Length: 117
Length: 116
Image 1 (cartoon, rainbow over the protein chains, first blue to last red):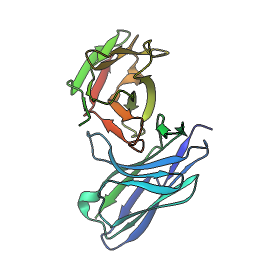
Image 2: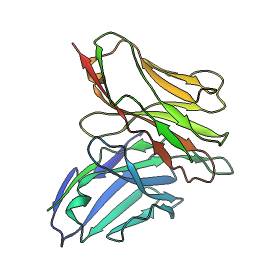
Image 3: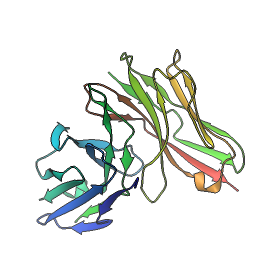
């Protein structure tokens, strides 16, 4: 199984709502990532989890809250978002190999298209 | 600082012809990986090909090949026999292997349109 799944595919929410994005992989990967992508732009890294621990937070506002309940699941909790947070949110996973932590190619999910009204 | 540069915002190619997408990178780290991803309008980022900094031969995967010129710090993607389904955004990316947590540095992308 070489698939990363994301739910929901589309999400529309108001600025006062609380919602969550979900990501799942069954490839045995121990690194998982959240990216934000605006149209015609490259993905921007938000968070990295390595062995279920948060290893990178790219100065993301606290209205985005990541969670990694186990090695296969990654959530992104959303609260009090702004219209400028509307974007495609991509989840990815990768193997971690080698004693020094060599990270291999990332496999991406199909993304969640988020619209904040 | 690490950087990826893709100088072609958009390109057109005739179906069945070959096309080269340019990518140059900048890093002083000797250990790195270079990746190409395809992103159709549906949004999913599809991994195409990988080249490690110590790999002696250019990577190939089916119709995709990576023209790796280390001295020039370039990692161009060559797509042979273009198909209509190749129309998409293509991103070149680099990862420093150690102490970077797997962070991918992306270029700005090249939008490829294949004409029938």
